[in-house]
Image 1 (cartoon, rainbow, N blue to C red):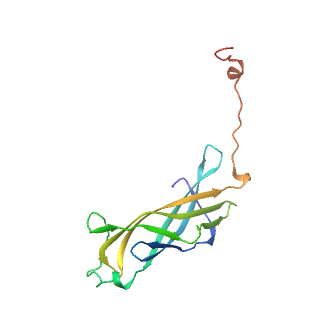
Image 2 (tube, helix red, strand yellow):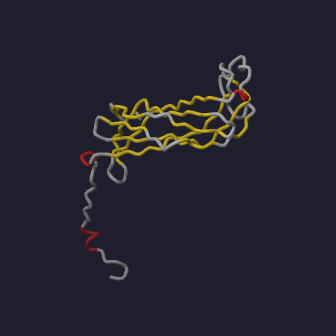
Image 3 (cartoon, helix red, strand yellow):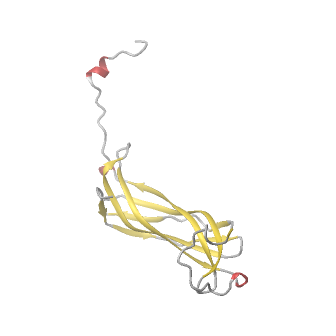
Length: 168
């Protein structure tokens, strides 16, 4: 990213996405892009290469039956190898929602949060709700204006023009 330049952008939509967990908890997730960079390289289709920094936010509303005494001291990490966990199945509630960012160079970045797995730990937050480990990834889509696409000039060399094929 040291060869990339930051690009100003405006956020058009950063929705909360709701999930219903099989244990009755409602999980709310939000993807936030904090910085976007445009590199000096271009992909094979001639589009500029972008990168970004992002953060995921999650919060829950758990049923009273799952609440307990807050863990003291509060955990500083929830490494699944160091806490007891239970796999929890989940379903997204409602329609698929995408974040939308308009970049100052005319490109539009759309991104969505895709959850791939959820583990409930045996630790509890200050509100007494169970703490979860959420595995998620960002799915990006970027639309670049034609003016930013670098067209490759397909110029055949004399050698290529004069070469006969295997059967020629």
